[in-house]
Image (tube, rainbow, N blue to C red; front, side, top):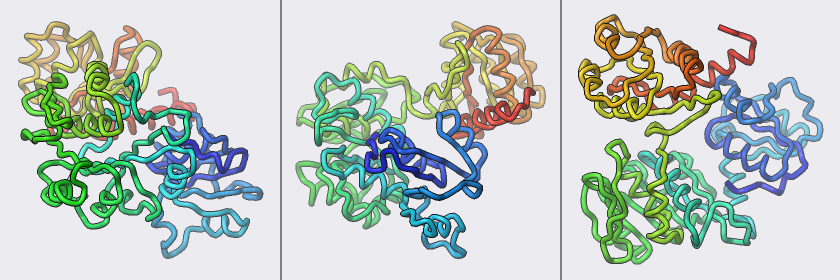
Length: 425
């Protein structure tokens, strides 16, 4: 994360708390700005409050002395009708800046950090792994928190539209392309400006670019096939051939998003982390979003998101490592109950979402089962049960119909907002 120091001690308002807006908030707070944040979505407001930000309705604020209005959606600048808050900012002489523009300015400011862009499938997982490897490398060429001028790096996981809107003045030091949509001309041009391109091997345009204009600084990665001179993750093994010699980097769990792991590894290596350091740090990787990632903690009870474990076998593996409260469903496969027969450690309690009794009857033999209509209700019941035992709460739907992505963090945000409003239920 790159601090934005140009607004230190000045009043800044942030409108919109999605990914870019929150990233701007973190950077501004680290740089010493006086922040006020707002979003129309109650869940995002609650998440910002939990993160320690001051959240107030901007329409009721005194705008005198406001130095900057940061908007998380650049499309608001061309909206018709024009949002009233933009008119208010102009009326008091406050500059209006899209969040991505602000972050790009900070990333390219003298003596600040460089920028690496990851975009496409599982971009957040790839960026998280690269950050983990760099943070735990003994002597990386670039690091996340290096105080020396020009030595730090910021890794941004962006949607293709966000990446394509980066100002032309921004030249990322690395670009990772992970999906076919991201081989469109704007992103290929962005990659061509970069010093390093990491491209999925099944992207035809990206592969040609890697072999052509960026020969020598490009790397191919794959989670499905062996690639020479790059990084591949096949059959549960990560292989690094970036230096011309294929070397095993380590074994990967079955739930790992293989292409994203290969991308995160290749990015960290291209940014200067050694093979040995990355191999050691890989053993300590705690997971990517939806892949065993701890999203919060209530007392002694961590809340762990395994929503990416959509097969019954992977879900049961996730909840039987240690005694836990398991949130399952809404369409748990009937084979999950059979798999519990071989489990070393059955769950302490199970909360089923939307079950009509069939799975409940089979699972009662292993742990007490309760039924919830929604994920919000299931999480509330699971937290009560976990508080009694000090057990983890594990969300592992165990089927392709299970909710994934931001479902669990969003549910936690809604529960937190209710608690802050005095709703004890």
